[in-house]
Length: 321
Image (cartoon, rainbow, N blue to C red):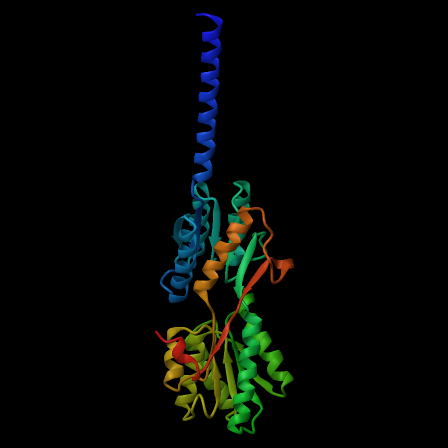
């Protein structure tokens, strides 16, 4: 073999290696991002909507979407979400137990997988970002509406009731904190302030007992809609109207609340946007994957707030299915 032929073969081999290298790099770049979503419980419509928003936003980017249903079980959350880390590039999680996020996020960091939390809470763990509704702002909306309605109805009472979700739900608790701060600043007295543990049965009992103690209550705010509707039912069972005798406000804009507003069983609710929250987590995931710093609403806690909307009889048709 002469020198020219050797030189030609060497050039061809080098070119082949270069092309192969370029092809491998291009292929790697074209591999879709794999996003895993571990969701609180898919039996609830709220989380079904959140899952759809997350899925749609991911698939619109050409990403692969993988779902894990925690089914309201802490062990399932930890084991299932941790198992996903072997085959995803970013984890989005709506945790059934925020204080159990630590091991999941520690494992994710070891694998270089960013974690975006959607709603419920972060448990103090070092997640990359968390999306939550503007719960404090929603509590303010509820109080301002209640004050306006009570004045319009001509009630002489300044007594109101505040029913919270549960002590281990700090984000949801902001709703009642904001409501109570705003309503008391307007001159009202919160005569009953109890946790309903997010259940309709307990909220019914709380409202029934509150009316037995103070029959002249002017308004009640509940941290979620099942409790708000239950409080309305307790008011009706006491022979009063939950819109004209006592202003009754919930939170979430669940279908039962929309129906109750339409039927005169609830004065108002504060609508969250679970679909939009899901889409927003994907936006944040993309930013973190690109080494960009999200525009936090609260940078210290890496929180991003989703706006909420007051739903009343005037606009309830916009929220009806």
